[in-house]
Length: 225
Image 1 (cartoon, rainbow, N blue to C red):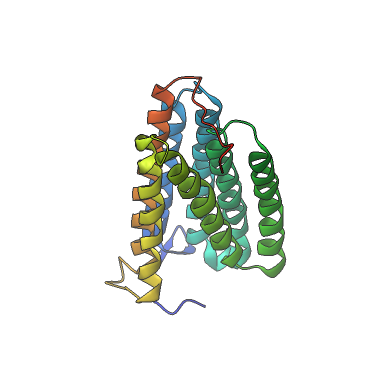
Image 2 (cartoon, one colour; image 1 turned 90 degrees about the horizontal axis):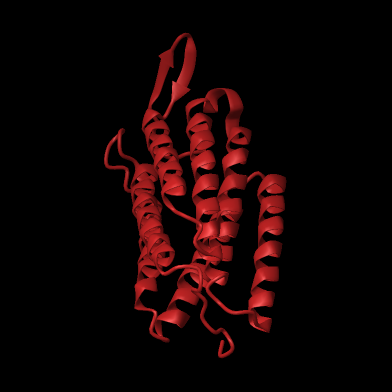
């Protein structure tokens, strides 16, 4: 159960709630859909970033509905966007792996990415908890988005710093829950977290756009990993 008060209201005889979450999630859905169309699949990495934004757009749409109709669907209404969040992370991981040439470590990371996808979806749905969605996001962003970026930055690919910044900013949202930053009824700890997630998504887009500009031959050696 949430420790903070949520906004509840009635519309057309329906008992609804969390209008701010609806606005945020649908804003994210619209932006991610725009970014999906603006990115051109010039290489394998950008192709997967497009899938990331497409899945995130669909996820945002259903997340808005889940928050709004929580009185009717309960926690189970959130399961579609839990799954979507994990699937979008899978494509983010594949996008970063695409920057590396084939190697044994790349193959092992791809296997880990696929296992992580299936295991975390199974655990999230079996135990009906968002915890495994958070765990999946942390593993994806730290190991793949930040980890691979840092490895390649050390080899001269400075433009990948955008992905590292995106990961760092995404984790700032956790402070909203850690310090219970419920600034008002219209801006609680969830809204605080959402703000940083939105900023990180913007940075992911700019990072993907930079990769797009570099064309189809963008691959770096992973033999030294």
